[in-house]
Amino acid sequence: MSLMRIMLKSKIHRARVTDANIDYEGSITIDKKLMKKADILLYEQVHVLNITNGDRFTTYAIEGKKDEICINGAAARLAAKDDIVIILTYSSVEDEKAHSFTPKLVYLDTKNTAAKSKRDVPPPICGGVIGLDDSGDTWN
Image (cartoon, rainbow, N blue to C red; front, side, top):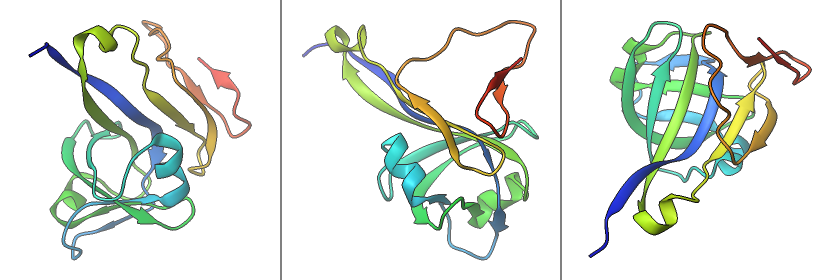
């Protein structure tokens, strides 16, 4: 049996929460097209990192309408409308393949539209903030 590593598979970066529905039974509703771009399946486990308040939680993805990002159920207490979140999935990859494995990254603008996507994680810029404006241009 070979060593397995848990690797980042997908990332939707800087999604804006459009609603929080505490009365729904759970999950995060994500624009169906964004799920496809990020290679996230219906009912797949996702990790949600709330940039606005620092909370993190795990749930599962369900398909939503265009530009929709809705936090449902108990997790709705961890995010509010207009919070900015990162949505992640992970995959177990054999050690030999992990060294060349690259995740699917989707960067959103302020309207939850995919500004760009790629397969490489950019190096961090310490002491600065990187983001995308509405035109899709990178700023720091």
